[in-house]
Image 1: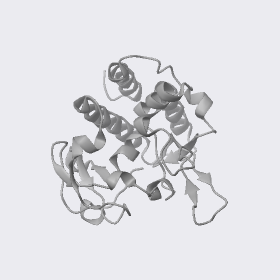
Image 2 (image 1 turned 180 degrees about the vertical axis):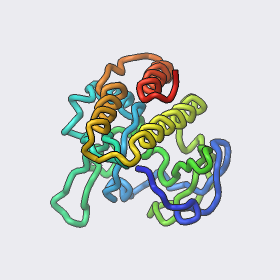
Image 3 (image 1 turned 60 degrees about the horizontal axis):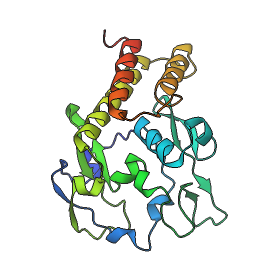
Image 4 (image 1 turned 30 degrees about the horizontal axis):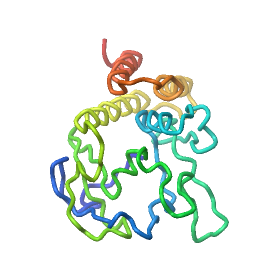
Length: 227
């Protein structure tokens, strides 16, 4: 979810690149799954859905209303993990992929937001950089780890380019809808288009980044931001 707090409010005040060392060590989260029980909105981008499709063998439509739900996120309808309400009030809202043993059942294919945590992304001044969110993780022991190792994402350069392009596309859509009624026909039309173009589509492809680039270019033309 888009957060409007300043970097100083959210983080240690520093910006990081993929090659920087940052204090995010958590000892493999042994005995802790607090971030899976905090009840945050875990918004899913197209790559997250691609990974879930590939790992679980289920389409977006099959996952919808089971482990995924649609939510209004900063004016756009986007998919998010469907958190479960546990009987114990102490557990609160829990990720649908948290196992009974307190471990993530989709760890190798977990969403990008989960991979980042307790890191976050900053888009200030048009730059994409990483930040360390303070007072978030309850289990962080402060051991220094290189950002790219923490993320564990193959072809990180392509992933970061995807993040920038996806963020730019959503930002463009939001600018287009500024001042429009939340129930307007235009807003509904754009939201449905984005869902069909990036989620309700066949992601059974080998080259995700290449196909995404094509679909993004089509979407930017659809929105009137490129020829």
